[in-house]
Length: 509
Ligand code: AMP
Image (cartoon, rainbow, N blue to C red):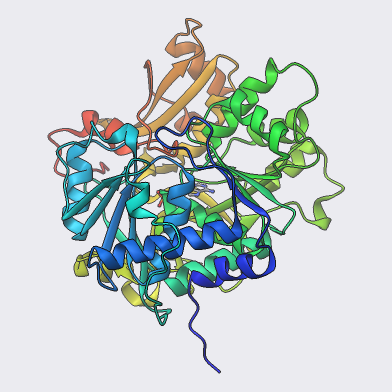
């Protein structure tokens, strides 16, 4: 028997098995018409009503519905109301400028644009055939008691188009199918052992790679969603305590905020020996991993992947063989990106680039056949990341474009960053290669301190204690802040841009 895998399966099961459980607790500060806690029966009814509203607006199966929203119960419902009725959800990064949002709305050909009330003014000039402000339009968008036309289901149909931000000049629309999302969610639930006892705090923006699949995975097992609108370390600790949170996801920068808040937290740290924290987006410093485990008492899990891979490709999680290791030893193991998750094949090509194969890999980039062909050349997805595989475990050495070649030797900027972050007065660092007449490229560190006055020599001396001479920065500059994407990833191409202006290549030998 063949039954198409669709996102509806997750909500259908929750509604059947856990109809009266509280499914979602919305952000209490949600502007305009906050949604009260909803059971799975209510979320499923809201999704059916949203589908009816899209029927009324004449949005066909396959039509695109863009949504620019902070995390909210309405956004969570839209993962089902839109995709589950055969339309395509286009979740947009709420931090983008109006012209960037406009590009996405136009490029995706969205017929409907849903806007968070707080973004209405900022996005006033961005329109679509139907433009609705969430909250204010709830009676229209979620008409109580209405049921949309049933979609027959097609697992090869596109469920979402996620525009990737930050790491390339122009965003690309990643087309993910129901099958991609289904398998990603189930694999995530399997490896992170997500169960009906889990309470997920949405620290990750849901627009980013569809919250890594958590809106589906947690729903499918009847867990609970706690919506968080704005990331703040102390607020995360308060919510963990108030709601009995067991699971959260984020970039290392989010964990750094929690660690900072924990330092002045009054009383026992909430969630000790209960919370699992799933981290990706950048390689967390081993020092951060150790602190999460010792200072917070939370289990650290690392994953690696891209929007293009739904995103889960690897996971690194404590295993029995590592039980005898001390905390530094365990942190070293967990500092690797991880082993391939079920159904994923990885290999490293001769240039050191990580290639991936599996049912989580994107169908194509929306309306960009050349980019699609390049990304999927040879039947493997080209990640653009550099890495090595050892004992079946992947380590990310760098973004391919971030490898610095200095004096003919490869330098991993991540390795240098990790060392510099061990300096007690360094808060943030980015290491890039800049053109250099003598060395080809010179390792350059851009640093944000904790306010202490440091000199370039302080940093270089610190690096010399643990790094080969050629890896140590030749230049050090101090900055007030470093540019990051919404999920905290460094936008190194922006930092590099200043140094490489006027060069026809981005490498220098
Ligand atoms: P995005 O598609 O925006 O989620 O970004 C994906 C990129 O984030 C990857 O290509 C990597 O460069 C980076 N990334 C994700 N997870 C990790 C990780 N665990 N370690 C290092 N880099 C990561």
